[in-house]
Image (cartoon, rainbow, N blue to C red; front, side):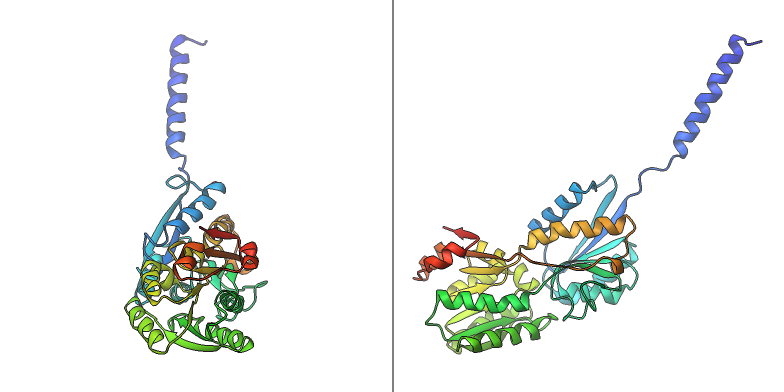
Length: 328
């Protein structure tokens, strides 16, 4: 016979079981994404925003199912090895890197945690992957052929300053790409009957001395290669370059936004946004070895007419028509 007491007892037991089951249900797993940055927090703010936007669009919400552990070397490459080991000790699920020095440090620290490149220059020739189609190891992502693009940049600079015969090329010897950049610059200058002059700034404190040498060698134009340290120090780089009163061309558009004359290269923020697709796939179980490396295919020409006017330069109309962005 069913009594009121039996009904209440059954209901109480049901509530107790439901409560225990609800307490036993695990919460959503929060995945950890590490980011080994050569730059400072302020320097990579736009890249950070672009990457997080890409992650949000793929359903990764900070504090709910993902958290970010970003370490900043503030332009000091000697700190990267220790920071990479820190990320490994913290057992992040994937490590994001944006340049060759960071990638080198991450690979030294781990052969198992997946590493995602966000636009490294020429990942194959730098030795990070054996091929784009089959990266094979624990690193994949996006790459750009900036050493090849450098020849195009020098050609554009020649159109803007045809009278400049001695071209200073600024390289960072700490970068895996420095030899490729120099070889590319020499070839491009030789094809245009120009003289390539090599100058080195591998740390922020060397930038001033490098510019002094450029002036002593009577260079007539300058090319700044695409380097993470130069990107981080772009305000200082622009200040030094502006003082030379020489036309300066860059591989990264951020230098032009900071006041530089012109740039020709890939969109770094877009690369970081696209890098989120690799992180997403890896967090969902894909292996880096099975994800082909994507190569940048779009390169933008950015021209700063304010800077051109300050230097007394007239940008050819044909070049302005080809520009993807003109700062007036």
